[in-house]
Amino acid sequence: MSNQGSHVIEAPREDLAARLLAEAEALVRRDGPDGIALRELARACGSSTMAIYTLYGGKPGLMQALYAVGFARLHAYGVATRDRDAPLRWMVRQMLAYRRFALDNTGLYRLMFGGEKRFIPTDRHTRFASLAAPVDDTYPAFAELVDAVGTCLAHHRPRTSDAAPEPAEVDDFAFLVWGQMHGHVSLEIAGYADPADALGRYQNVVRFICTHCGADAADVEAELDAAP
Image (tube, rainbow, N blue to C red; front, side):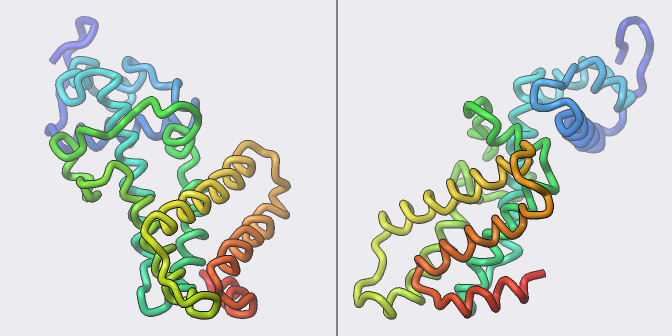
């Protein structure tokens, strides 16, 4: 292929696609979600802009693929905490994993949650199946959170009520948890939280949420102390 009259030898298709996404992620981390220029991206990968159009259909397709990568990675962080035999531990570590993902992947986090929902990974089941995220839910990371919340509520609810939590209640509570996590992490990333205090403030969110699930405060504290 050629680019601006200079001949470029393309890498194998799968290798080039992975390299383009990795470099695009680095540009987003450096310059923000709107900082990707296709020519700069192609040059950094030793490729051509035509390859980006061939592989992703242009910048919108590339950004959608990167968006899907972010949710697949967030899902992986959540899955790594799954522990149905210890619901409170699962809940605590699920919440801590959300913050860890955001701080480890600030560029992707800003792309995923930095404003309006500009990129919707609806094509993942056809074009992005290799990302190893469930395809029956647009946001599998939220489904993982719902699972953790529901399991924790079901385990601790008998202490406060005889009724098992209804699915709608679990979903609403999980959305509340997501909002709390997202708000604190977003403030931290934006620099509104003193780095020395940020973890402690976030742990206060974990304490608040878990005790409202019915867990004992001492048990929550023990899980926070034991968390990696």
